[in-house]
Image (cartoon, rainbow, N blue to C red; front, top):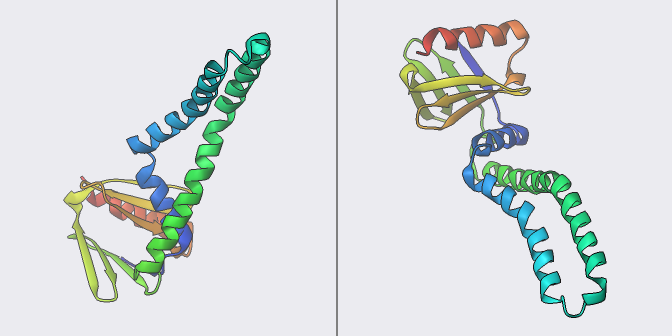
Length: 174
């Protein structure tokens, strides 16, 4: 079975998201952002307590409201920031890589998966395939070395061809 296509920005963007979704640094960053601003606000209030003495209750209420609102929206803010950085990284990868300039040819056979771009060939045996999962726009093949191969769904002419592709892989992975 052979597939030929050219990668687009959206393919790399989803690949970056998938490979980083469980990254502990990203999780710590999101938690840090959620805690940092309310803690800094509280610290400033405590440092200015002698100037705020008659308004301390109002200041505390403002801090509490800010903390609640921030807790509710900080995840969305963080996700927006990460989306922008993923888009920037995807564009940089595309500008430096051959993947978007030349067609990629994927072939599946009894030995494994072969990815070829302009004479450069990468081969993964079926034993190296950990799992396969499907998103709305891509099929991801996770290898045991934590690398991913992504195949955009748009390369398939119809659902039957995609299902045949997935069945072929499922038949060969252990």
